Image 1 (cartoon, rainbow, N blue to C red):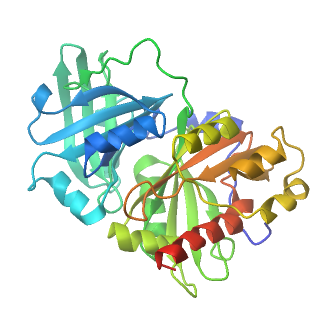
Image 2: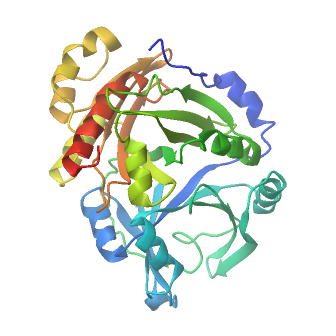
Image 3: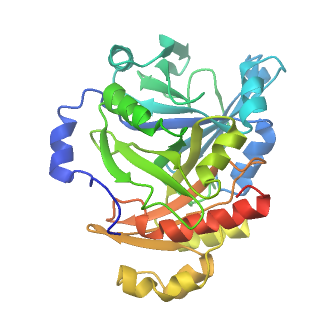
Length: 382
Protein backbone atom coordinates (compact mmCIF):
# COMPACT_ATOMS: atom_id res chain seq x y z
CA UNK A 1 0.00 0.00 0.00
CA UNK A 2 1.78 3.08 -1.27
CA UNK A 3 0.09 5.51 1.12
CA UNK A 4 1.28 3.70 4.27
CA UNK A 5 3.96 5.61 6.14
CA UNK A 6 5.92 2.90 7.91
CA UNK A 7 9.26 1.90 9.32
CA UNK A 8 10.09 -1.77 8.93
CA UNK A 9 11.33 -3.82 11.83
CA UNK A 10 15.09 -4.42 12.03
CA UNK A 11 16.39 -7.64 10.54
CA UNK A 12 17.61 -10.61 12.56
CA UNK A 13 21.23 -9.37 12.71
CA UNK A 14 20.16 -5.96 13.97
CA UNK A 15 17.88 -7.50 16.59
CA UNK A 16 20.69 -9.78 17.74
CA UNK A 17 23.04 -6.79 18.06
CA UNK A 18 20.42 -4.81 19.98
CA UNK A 19 19.77 -7.73 22.32
CA UNK A 20 23.30 -7.29 23.75
CA UNK A 21 22.66 -3.57 24.33
CA UNK A 22 19.07 -3.80 25.55
CA UNK A 23 18.62 -1.52 28.57
CA UNK A 24 15.40 -3.27 29.59
CA UNK A 25 15.69 -6.96 28.64
CA UNK A 26 12.37 -8.82 28.49
CA UNK A 27 11.93 -12.59 28.30
CA UNK A 28 8.39 -12.09 26.98
CA UNK A 29 4.82 -11.73 28.22
CA UNK A 30 4.53 -13.71 31.46
CA UNK A 31 0.74 -13.49 31.75
CA UNK A 32 -2.23 -11.24 31.06
CA UNK A 33 -4.69 -10.58 33.88
CA UNK A 34 -8.29 -9.65 33.10
CA UNK A 35 -10.57 -8.19 35.74
CA UNK A 36 -14.04 -9.53 35.04
CA UNK A 37 -17.55 -9.46 36.49
CA UNK A 38 -17.84 -13.21 37.05
CA UNK A 39 -14.54 -15.07 37.01
CA UNK A 40 -16.09 -18.54 37.31
CA UNK A 41 -18.34 -18.06 34.29
CA UNK A 42 -15.59 -16.32 32.31
CA UNK A 43 -13.26 -19.25 33.00
CA UNK A 44 -15.92 -21.64 31.70
CA UNK A 45 -16.17 -19.66 28.45
CA UNK A 46 -12.40 -19.45 27.96
CA UNK A 47 -11.95 -23.18 28.57
CA UNK A 48 -14.98 -24.49 26.69
CA UNK A 49 -15.00 -22.00 23.78
CA UNK A 50 -11.37 -20.91 23.40
CA UNK A 51 -9.66 -24.17 24.38
CA UNK A 52 -7.77 -23.05 27.50
CA UNK A 53 -7.08 -25.34 30.47
CA UNK A 54 -7.30 -24.15 34.06
CA UNK A 55 -3.97 -24.84 35.78
CA UNK A 56 -4.18 -22.84 39.04
CA UNK A 57 -6.62 -21.07 41.31
CA UNK A 58 -6.64 -18.56 44.18
CA UNK A 59 -9.65 -17.56 46.29
CA UNK A 60 -11.33 -18.15 49.61
CA UNK A 61 -10.19 -21.77 49.64
CA UNK A 62 -6.53 -20.66 49.40
CA UNK A 63 -6.82 -17.88 51.99
CA UNK A 64 -7.52 -14.96 49.64
CA UNK A 65 -10.39 -12.83 50.98
CA UNK A 66 -10.91 -10.05 48.41
CA UNK A 67 -10.74 -11.78 45.02
CA UNK A 68 -10.87 -15.02 43.10
CA UNK A 69 -8.50 -15.82 40.23
CA UNK A 70 -8.57 -18.63 37.67
CA UNK A 71 -5.27 -19.19 35.82
CA UNK A 72 -5.73 -20.56 32.30
CA UNK A 73 -3.05 -21.94 30.01
CA UNK A 74 -2.73 -22.84 26.35
CA UNK A 75 0.66 -23.29 24.72
CA UNK A 76 2.88 -20.58 26.25
CA UNK A 77 -0.12 -18.32 26.98
CA UNK A 78 -1.20 -17.63 30.53
CA UNK A 79 -4.44 -15.74 31.19
CA UNK A 80 -5.61 -14.86 34.70
CA UNK A 81 -9.33 -14.16 35.14
CA UNK A 82 -9.93 -12.28 38.38
CA UNK A 83 -13.23 -11.30 39.97
CA UNK A 84 -14.11 -9.32 43.11
CA UNK A 85 -15.40 -10.86 46.33
CA UNK A 86 -16.72 -7.55 47.64
CA UNK A 87 -18.58 -4.57 46.23
CA UNK A 88 -16.11 -2.03 47.59
CA UNK A 89 -12.98 -3.55 46.02
CA UNK A 90 -10.77 -2.00 43.36
CA UNK A 91 -11.65 -4.92 41.09
CA UNK A 92 -15.39 -4.25 41.39
CA UNK A 93 -14.86 -0.55 40.64
CA UNK A 94 -12.69 -1.40 37.62
CA UNK A 95 -15.43 -3.67 36.28
CA UNK A 96 -18.14 -1.09 36.97
CA UNK A 97 -16.26 1.42 34.86
CA UNK A 98 -14.74 -0.72 32.13
CA UNK A 99 -16.63 -4.01 32.02
CA UNK A 100 -14.49 -7.12 31.48
CA UNK A 101 -11.05 -5.89 30.49
CA UNK A 102 -7.30 -6.31 30.66
CA UNK A 103 -5.82 -4.95 33.87
CA UNK A 104 -2.24 -6.21 33.75
CA UNK A 105 0.12 -7.18 30.93
CA UNK A 106 2.83 -8.86 33.01
CA UNK A 107 6.34 -9.10 31.61
CA UNK A 108 8.97 -11.70 32.49
CA UNK A 109 12.32 -10.05 33.29
CA UNK A 110 15.72 -11.34 34.42
CA UNK A 111 16.00 -8.76 37.23
CA UNK A 112 12.96 -7.06 38.77
CA UNK A 113 15.01 -4.50 40.71
CA UNK A 114 16.80 -3.37 37.55
CA UNK A 115 13.52 -3.21 35.58
CA UNK A 116 11.91 -1.13 38.35
CA UNK A 117 14.86 1.23 38.72
CA UNK A 118 15.21 1.76 34.98
CA UNK A 119 11.46 2.29 34.47
CA UNK A 120 11.15 4.89 37.23
CA UNK A 121 14.34 6.66 36.16
CA UNK A 122 12.79 7.08 32.70
CA UNK A 123 9.44 8.48 33.78
CA UNK A 124 7.26 5.49 34.71
CA UNK A 125 4.78 5.80 37.57
CA UNK A 126 5.43 3.18 40.22
CA UNK A 127 2.44 1.24 41.55
CA UNK A 128 4.03 -1.55 43.61
CA UNK A 129 7.73 -1.54 44.53
CA UNK A 130 9.86 -4.69 44.17
CA UNK A 131 8.82 -7.37 46.64
CA UNK A 132 8.95 -11.14 47.05
CA UNK A 133 6.20 -13.74 47.22
CA UNK A 134 7.06 -17.11 48.75
CA UNK A 135 5.38 -20.44 49.26
CA UNK A 136 6.68 -24.03 49.61
CA UNK A 137 7.37 -24.08 45.84
CA UNK A 138 9.85 -21.20 46.02
CA UNK A 139 10.12 -17.45 45.47
CA UNK A 140 9.00 -14.97 42.82
CA UNK A 141 9.93 -11.28 42.71
CA UNK A 142 7.41 -8.72 41.43
CA UNK A 143 7.01 -4.99 40.81
CA UNK A 144 4.31 -3.01 38.99
CA UNK A 145 4.18 0.24 37.00
CA UNK A 146 1.27 2.13 35.41
CA UNK A 147 0.62 2.29 31.66
CA UNK A 148 -2.21 3.85 29.60
CA UNK A 149 -5.54 4.29 31.38
CA UNK A 150 -5.92 1.78 34.20
CA UNK A 151 -3.60 -0.74 32.51
CA UNK A 152 -0.59 -2.00 34.45
CA UNK A 153 2.67 -3.79 33.68
CA UNK A 154 3.95 -6.15 36.36
CA UNK A 155 7.58 -7.26 36.16
CA UNK A 156 7.96 -10.94 37.10
CA UNK A 157 11.26 -12.57 38.06
CA UNK A 158 11.12 -16.29 38.78
CA UNK A 159 13.87 -16.87 41.31
CA UNK A 160 13.42 -20.57 42.08
CA UNK A 161 9.65 -21.09 41.98
CA UNK A 162 8.45 -24.44 40.65
CA UNK A 163 4.70 -24.11 41.29
CA UNK A 164 1.95 -23.94 38.66
CA UNK A 165 1.85 -20.14 38.54
CA UNK A 166 2.78 -17.69 41.33
CA UNK A 167 3.08 -18.25 45.09
CA UNK A 168 -0.32 -18.48 46.73
CA UNK A 169 -2.04 -20.27 43.84
CA UNK A 170 -3.21 -23.85 44.18
CA UNK A 171 -2.62 -26.23 41.30
CA UNK A 172 -5.58 -27.59 39.37
CA UNK A 173 -5.50 -31.19 38.20
CA UNK A 174 -5.30 -30.95 34.40
CA UNK A 175 -5.11 -34.70 33.94
CA UNK A 176 -3.09 -36.72 31.47
CA UNK A 177 -5.44 -36.04 28.58
CA UNK A 178 -4.97 -32.28 28.24
CA UNK A 179 -6.04 -31.29 24.70
CA UNK A 180 -3.57 -30.21 22.03
CA UNK A 181 -3.36 -26.41 22.03
CA UNK A 182 -5.21 -24.51 19.32
CA UNK A 183 -3.07 -21.41 19.91
CA UNK A 184 0.53 -21.33 21.09
CA UNK A 185 1.70 -17.85 22.09
CA UNK A 186 0.79 -14.17 22.27
CA UNK A 187 1.89 -12.45 19.07
CA UNK A 188 1.00 -8.90 20.13
CA UNK A 189 -1.40 -6.87 22.30
CA UNK A 190 -3.06 -3.72 20.94
CA UNK A 191 -3.77 -0.66 23.08
CA UNK A 192 -6.28 2.09 22.26
CA UNK A 193 -5.63 5.61 23.56
CA UNK A 194 -7.29 9.01 23.19
CA UNK A 195 -6.89 11.32 20.21
CA UNK A 196 -3.51 13.02 20.40
CA UNK A 197 -1.99 10.56 22.91
CA UNK A 198 -0.54 7.88 20.61
CA UNK A 199 2.86 9.55 20.30
CA UNK A 200 2.96 10.13 24.07
CA UNK A 201 2.57 6.41 24.76
CA UNK A 202 4.92 5.38 21.97
CA UNK A 203 7.45 7.68 23.67
CA UNK A 204 6.66 6.02 27.00
CA UNK A 205 7.55 2.56 25.68
CA UNK A 206 10.64 3.91 23.96
CA UNK A 207 11.91 5.60 27.15
CA UNK A 208 10.77 3.16 29.81
CA UNK A 209 11.34 -0.12 27.95
CA UNK A 210 13.98 0.88 25.40
CA UNK A 211 11.58 -0.21 22.66
CA UNK A 212 11.76 1.01 19.08
CA UNK A 213 9.06 1.92 16.58
CA UNK A 214 8.54 -1.01 14.26
CA UNK A 215 5.75 0.25 11.98
CA UNK A 216 3.74 3.44 11.55
CA UNK A 217 0.34 3.56 9.85
CA UNK A 218 -1.19 6.92 9.00
CA UNK A 219 -4.89 7.78 8.93
CA UNK A 220 -4.73 7.71 5.11
CA UNK A 221 -3.64 4.07 5.30
CA UNK A 222 -6.16 2.95 7.92
CA UNK A 223 -9.38 4.49 6.68
CA UNK A 224 -12.71 3.70 5.09
CA UNK A 225 -15.48 5.84 3.67
CA UNK A 226 -16.64 6.62 7.21
CA UNK A 227 -13.80 6.46 9.73
CA UNK A 228 -10.05 6.40 10.26
CA UNK A 229 -7.42 5.67 12.87
CA UNK A 230 -3.68 5.97 13.30
CA UNK A 231 -1.35 3.31 14.68
CA UNK A 232 2.28 2.81 15.65
CA UNK A 233 3.89 -0.48 16.67
CA UNK A 234 6.72 -0.68 19.22
CA UNK A 235 8.84 -3.74 19.95
CA UNK A 236 11.50 -4.73 22.45
CA UNK A 237 15.16 -5.39 21.62
CA UNK A 238 14.66 -9.10 20.92
CA UNK A 239 11.41 -8.72 19.01
CA UNK A 240 9.57 -10.87 21.57
CA UNK A 241 7.07 -8.25 22.77
CA UNK A 242 5.07 -6.12 20.32
CA UNK A 243 2.60 -3.41 21.30
CA UNK A 244 0.62 -1.61 18.58
CA UNK A 245 -0.83 1.67 19.93
CA UNK A 246 -3.92 3.11 18.18
CA UNK A 247 -5.63 6.47 18.38
CA UNK A 248 -8.75 7.70 16.53
CA UNK A 249 -8.56 10.11 13.61
CA UNK A 250 -11.04 12.53 12.15
CA UNK A 251 -13.74 10.77 10.12
CA UNK A 252 -17.31 11.20 8.94
CA UNK A 253 -18.53 8.81 11.62
CA UNK A 254 -17.34 7.12 14.81
CA UNK A 255 -14.32 4.85 14.39
CA UNK A 256 -13.80 1.52 16.16
CA UNK A 257 -11.32 3.31 18.46
CA UNK A 258 -13.93 5.94 19.37
CA UNK A 259 -16.42 3.17 20.11
CA UNK A 260 -13.90 1.36 22.32
CA UNK A 261 -12.98 4.51 24.25
CA UNK A 262 -16.65 5.30 24.82
CA UNK A 263 -17.72 1.87 26.07
CA UNK A 264 -14.49 1.10 27.95
CA UNK A 265 -14.67 4.59 29.45
CA UNK A 266 -11.09 5.44 28.61
CA UNK A 267 -7.89 3.94 27.20
CA UNK A 268 -7.25 0.22 27.45
CA UNK A 269 -6.05 -2.93 25.73
CA UNK A 270 -8.30 -3.63 22.75
CA UNK A 271 -7.25 -7.10 21.65
CA UNK A 272 -4.80 -9.95 22.11
CA UNK A 273 -3.39 -11.64 19.01
CA UNK A 274 -2.91 -15.39 19.54
CA UNK A 275 -0.46 -17.25 17.30
CA UNK A 276 -1.28 -20.65 15.82
CA UNK A 277 0.39 -23.06 13.40
CA UNK A 278 -2.89 -24.14 11.76
CA UNK A 279 -5.28 -21.23 11.49
CA UNK A 280 -7.78 -23.06 9.29
CA UNK A 281 -8.13 -25.96 11.71
CA UNK A 282 -8.02 -23.63 14.73
CA UNK A 283 -10.80 -21.36 13.44
CA UNK A 284 -12.96 -24.28 12.38
CA UNK A 285 -12.63 -25.76 15.87
CA UNK A 286 -13.36 -22.42 17.57
CA UNK A 287 -16.44 -21.88 15.40
CA UNK A 288 -17.64 -25.34 16.41
CA UNK A 289 -17.21 -24.31 20.06
CA UNK A 290 -19.39 -21.23 19.54
CA UNK A 291 -16.82 -18.47 18.97
CA UNK A 292 -18.11 -15.78 16.60
CA UNK A 293 -15.87 -14.03 14.07
CA UNK A 294 -16.21 -10.93 11.92
CA UNK A 295 -17.78 -11.64 8.52
CA UNK A 296 -15.71 -10.93 5.41
CA UNK A 297 -17.53 -10.45 2.07
CA UNK A 298 -16.90 -13.16 -0.57
CA UNK A 299 -15.59 -10.53 -3.01
CA UNK A 300 -12.47 -10.16 -0.83
CA UNK A 301 -11.28 -13.58 -2.01
CA UNK A 302 -11.77 -12.87 -5.73
CA UNK A 303 -8.71 -10.60 -5.85
CA UNK A 304 -6.67 -12.45 -3.22
CA UNK A 305 -4.49 -14.62 -5.53
CA UNK A 306 -3.32 -11.61 -7.52
CA UNK A 307 -2.57 -9.59 -4.40
CA UNK A 308 -0.70 -12.10 -2.22
CA UNK A 309 0.61 -14.65 -4.71
CA UNK A 310 1.17 -18.33 -3.93
CA UNK A 311 0.38 -19.59 -0.44
CA UNK A 312 0.19 -23.06 1.07
CA UNK A 313 -3.43 -22.85 2.21
CA UNK A 314 -6.48 -23.62 0.08
CA UNK A 315 -8.34 -20.49 -1.06
CA UNK A 316 -11.64 -22.31 -0.52
CA UNK A 317 -10.70 -23.16 3.07
CA UNK A 318 -9.83 -19.52 3.73
CA UNK A 319 -13.08 -18.35 2.13
CA UNK A 320 -15.10 -20.85 4.15
CA UNK A 321 -13.59 -19.69 7.43
CA UNK A 322 -13.36 -15.96 6.59
CA UNK A 323 -9.59 -15.80 7.08
CA UNK A 324 -7.65 -12.78 5.79
CA UNK A 325 -4.25 -13.00 4.06
CA UNK A 326 -1.49 -10.45 3.53
CA UNK A 327 2.12 -10.47 2.33
CA UNK A 328 5.18 -8.34 3.07
CA UNK A 329 8.83 -8.48 1.96
CA UNK A 330 9.57 -11.42 4.27
CA UNK A 331 6.60 -13.72 3.71
CA UNK A 332 2.87 -13.88 4.28
CA UNK A 333 0.49 -14.06 7.22
CA UNK A 334 -3.09 -15.12 7.89
CA UNK A 335 -5.41 -13.52 10.43
CA UNK A 336 -8.98 -13.40 11.65
CA UNK A 337 -10.74 -11.44 14.39
CA UNK A 338 -13.43 -12.51 16.82
CA UNK A 339 -16.40 -10.38 17.69
CA UNK A 340 -16.17 -8.78 21.17
CA UNK A 341 -16.09 -11.50 23.82
CA UNK A 342 -17.92 -9.54 26.52
CA UNK A 343 -21.13 -7.56 26.88
CA UNK A 344 -19.51 -4.30 25.80
CA UNK A 345 -18.09 -3.77 22.28
CA UNK A 346 -14.55 -3.54 23.61
CA UNK A 347 -12.12 -6.47 23.95
CA UNK A 348 -11.72 -9.19 21.30
CA UNK A 349 -9.13 -11.68 20.05
CA UNK A 350 -7.16 -12.07 16.86
CA UNK A 351 -5.94 -15.45 15.59
CA UNK A 352 -2.77 -15.14 13.52
CA UNK A 353 -0.46 -17.49 11.64
CA UNK A 354 2.82 -16.15 10.28
CA UNK A 355 4.85 -17.56 7.41
CA UNK A 356 7.85 -15.24 7.63
CA UNK A 357 5.82 -12.02 7.53
CA UNK A 358 6.47 -9.58 10.37
CA UNK A 359 3.82 -7.02 9.42
CA UNK A 360 0.29 -6.67 10.80
CA UNK A 361 -1.91 -7.16 7.74
CA UNK A 362 -2.00 -3.65 6.30
CA UNK A 363 -3.30 -5.06 3.03
CA UNK A 364 -6.37 -6.23 4.95
CA UNK A 365 -7.12 -2.96 6.70
CA UNK A 366 -9.92 -1.86 4.39
CA UNK A 367 -11.73 -5.22 4.46
CA UNK A 368 -11.22 -5.58 8.20
CA UNK A 369 -12.38 -2.12 9.20
CA UNK A 370 -15.38 -2.27 6.90
CA UNK A 371 -16.31 -5.56 8.63
CA UNK A 372 -15.94 -3.85 12.01
CA UNK A 373 -18.07 -0.93 10.81
CA UNK A 374 -20.85 -3.32 9.78
CA UNK A 375 -20.90 -4.61 13.36
CA UNK A 376 -20.80 -1.04 14.71
CA UNK A 377 -23.77 -0.15 12.50
CA UNK A 378 -25.74 -3.14 13.84
CA UNK A 379 -25.05 -1.84 17.35
CA UNK A 380 -26.06 1.72 16.41
CA UNK A 381 -22.54 3.00 17.13
CA UNK A 382 -21.24 3.97 13.68
